[in-house]
Length: 150
Image (cartoon, rainbow, N blue to C red; front, side, top):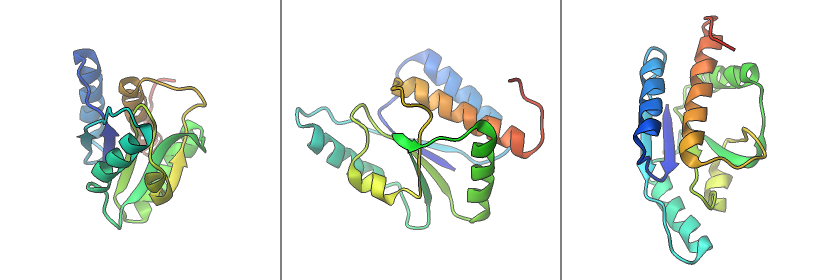
């Protein structure tokens, strides 16, 4: 499983939270987090295109791609766990993509096998990375019928 993110995590407290979930998830899956540089040109469309090119370098043809988008599909934690289990059964590597502050280029959205939304709200990308990791971890706990706090 891969999580490809636009932008780097600089704050130590976010890094520690991410590391904690990576450690917990190591019991269930090999997880790779890839960070690509965010672009800060004045032209938003050009930023998205350049970020998309960086993201595409880490996406293989056989990957099952899930983009995180405000307008994507929403699932309960139980439904998300079932989706992860189903996606794993396809024997394709699962790749989550978190865009930068301007979102994702249309070319990345079109490549997605699933467009996922956690909320109609906008979250800081550092926080969202932790939220995604927590929900992936929760999914594995559900899949394996293990207890986890609610």
